[in-house]
Length: 259
Ligand SMILES: Nc1ncnc2c1ncn2[C@@H]1O[C@H](COP(=O)(O)OP(=O)(O)OP(=O)(O)O)[C@@H](O)[C@H]1O
Image: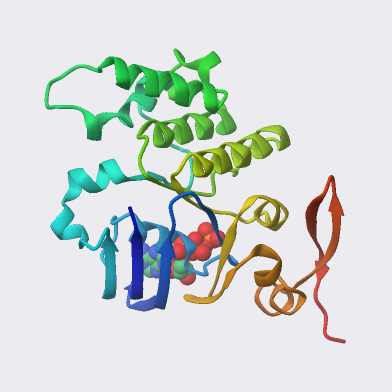
């Protein structure tokens, strides 16, 4: 399935938040959305997920508008992980992951074998199986985040859009989640991830889209997008660059100063 955004624009609270954004999502690719706080990354992700209507511009899923496609079909095609993890549902971790299967279920039908397999696989993949029976509210912030990612993964949608899935995770789980997202893309899904960690973005993503003050200012291979000039102009930082284990290494280092 293709997802294509053309000239997307949206205002929130009377303020333009995104303008003239053209972006195509590709199956099999891990795309990182990067940019400073307030740049418009979450807003763009919500637009792509069909959760927020654009004020102008167009969004097409396999050539169809979100309206023509309908809510249910969209929910099967796009899995969305929202920012934050302060969900207080009185449900077990496993039941929360099971919510990811709702778009596939017939009304009043129980979970099928395929549903249970998808739930088990997602819990394992996110290292959340050990606390599958615990109420969500009793889990730590990072554990809860992994359960919510497992819920999005359990949808087994052709597109997975994840807003800051690494927030609150320890280093091992950050790396494991990036590996998981890359694996999910390699199996054929289009994966879009909002990230603040430019080191992991540069290392794991196939392509980066850089958002600054509501505009898509660069798009392409990570090393091209995150060049010294853009790191200074957009993020206001310098970076150390190198290679380790045959992979590129980019480490934001200090505040940029032109003097
Ligand atoms: N409901 C709203 N009403 C008014 N302004 C809003 C609303 N939602 C978001 N904004 C503003 O839109 C801009 C973009 O917000 P968005 O959450 O998309 O940024 P972001 O790039 O995801 O930021 P962060 O990295 O801090 O999560 C910000 O200036 C924000 O204050």
